[in-house]
Each structure stands twice: as structure tokens, then as C-alpha cells.
Amino acid sequence: MADFPRTTVGGVSVSRMIIGSNWFFGWSHQTAAKDKFIKSYQTRKNIADILTVFFKSGVDTIMSQALPLLRDAISDAQERTGRKAITILTPHFNILPGGPAESEPERVFDACQQFGGTFCLPHQCITDRLTDQMHGVIRDIDKYTKMIRQRGMVPGLSTHMPDTIVVADKTNADVETYIQLYNAIGFLMSVEVDWVMRVISQAKKPVMTIKPMAAGRLLPAVGLAFSWNTIREQDMVTVGTTTPDEAKEVLEISFDLLNRRVPAYELQKTRSKKSLE
Image (cartoon, rainbow, N blue to C red):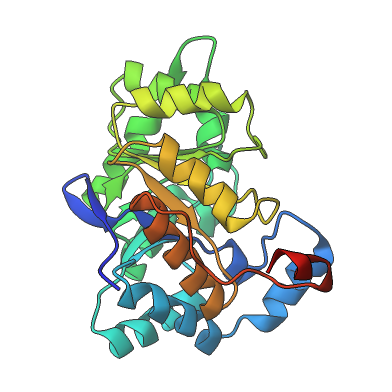
């Protein structure tokens, strides 16, 4: 299998598929029981096994928090494959006085730098609170992006509101990319899917789309077909998987879709489908 297609963000070459981490750390967006299962299942080895599949196919870009378990799994996968990971970190931090000392922005950005972050994009829980739609500004964003650049990382922002991208573009915020929710059923999205499609298509910077399969509510072939066929060549799709086989599956499906082929992967078989064979 050839290496996965790439794009450039802030002068850095990244794979157009990004490895998501919700299914590593128990953020299923489904049930507490599902979260508990993920947390009990995912070990350093299991995560490294998934990363190895992606790395071998040229998908070397990862989106996550700066968590020790991931750092160790990345180290193992890098050693196995000889491919260096590109990390997109999405930290949260104090934006008002009086928060925990360890959550002060300077300390959080220092931790991201020490983790080896390539990109640093304040998480949606920060960015969307800072977005002032009345006045058309993202409060303090340039203060935070300056701190990020001082630590040698590429700044961006993460949002669930497409309005944030519009405001950032209009105000020429010092960011190189955006993370934006985007899936065919509008899961967690604040407006209709076609509006978000337009915002992404007109964004001044490359967009990293997330939750293409709506946290497991869409089949991979359905969610990925929508995403790959409605974003630009400079944009990216973030995909979370729980096992190496799932990683192989989304890679095969995506390669077929990007080459305008009907995905030819193994279908799930049940007795009710016997007449279709």
C-alpha cells in the first residue's frame, strides 16, 4: 500500500488522514459503559499496535492531549516503523484568574512543548468561550498563539462553531489551521451540515475535520465517503479507531474513496444477508 496523501499546514507536511485519540482514552460520545470499556482495553501496547498500522501507511499525524500513555505508545510505534510522529495537541487552560496553578497557560504550553508537540490548538472548550460573536473577535487569541509560537509550535484553534472560523479569518487571527466538527448527520454540529461545508470550503487556512463517523453513528464507508468528497485537497479528516483491524479498514476504505473506487473491504456477514451473496 502506498503512503497516504499529504498536505502542508503552517509549513509542516502532514498526512491528510489524522489519527484521532477519543477511542484511545475513553471519550466515546456514547455511554459511560463504552467509555469504561475503552479505558480498560487500551494499553500502551494496544495503542502502539494501532499507531504502527497507521505509520506504515504514511499516516503519521496524531491529534490528542499531551498524555503520558500516548507519548509512550508513540515512542514504541516510532521505534517499530522508523517514522517520526507529528503531534497536534489540543490543550485546555485557565482563561480567567483563580484557576489551578498547573492549568496556567504558560505551564500548559510548556508541557505541550516538552511532549514534543508540532501543533498546538487550544481546545474547543477554550476557543468557543473566547469567541465573541457580538463584537466579531476571539478574545486574547493572539496572546495565546504568541506563547505557542515562542515555544516552537504551530498555532491553530479548535472549534465546534463554524462561526469561530469566520471570525478568525475576518480578524486575521495568528493561526495556521482550524479543527472543525464535520459529519454527514450533523452530530454535535451547531448549524446545518451544508453551512459548515461552505465555511470549510471558504476557510483561509487548511481545516482538520473531526468526527467523520459521528462517534460510531455512521458506518466508516458512509462517513468517510461524505468527508473525503466534500472537503478540499488541503483539508484533513481525523479518524479514531479502537483496534489495528479498524485502522486497516479505514485506511483501505479511504484509499479507495480517494481514488474514486467503490470501497472493496470485507463486509460484516449475518444470516439475513445470505441471499445477497
